[in-house]
Every structure is written in C-alpha cells, then in structure tokens.
Amino acid sequence: MMLNGMLWIARSGAQWRELPEAYGPWQSVYARFAKWRDDGTLETVFHALSEDADMENLSIDSTSIKVHESANGGGKNGR
Image (cartoon, rainbow, N blue to C red; front, side):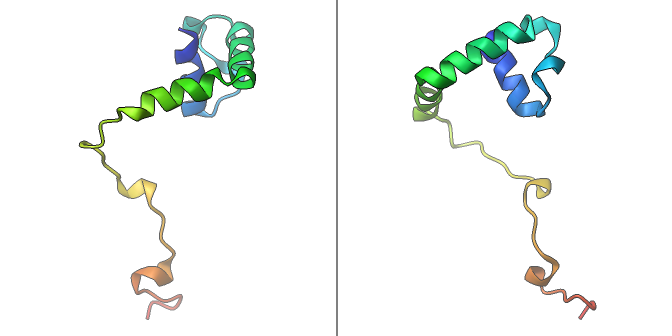
C-alpha cells in the first residue's frame, strides 16, 4: 500500500499531506519513501520493473506533445 501511495503522489503532484487516507498516514508513507530513496531501494525496484516492460502497447496523445506554432508551418502572423 505504501508504494501505491508513493505512486499516487508522483502521478498527482500533490503534497504529502494530501495523500488519501486509504494509503495510510502520510507521515508513514513519506518516511518509507525517504528511506527507500536514500538507500537505493526505489531505484532498484524501478529498474527491475522496467526490465520487462511491455513496449507493444504504447500510445501518446496530443496533450503530451507541444509544438511551437512555427514548427507546424504556421507563422506568428498566420502566414
């Protein structure tokens, strides 16, 4: 549950105090996060998970890609 809480914080960008109660007390989740960050456990976990990543079903939607207007042929004055 603590790892899920850490992932929720990473996904949402929320402050630790805003962690939903379903993940446990935010202080406990943060303490475990800080310990795992400092001792390298988080890096080990994410490397292990990414070794066998399923790259077959990736998708990117248009909200992920930002292009300057001049890059798509349009000029500042609409030319």
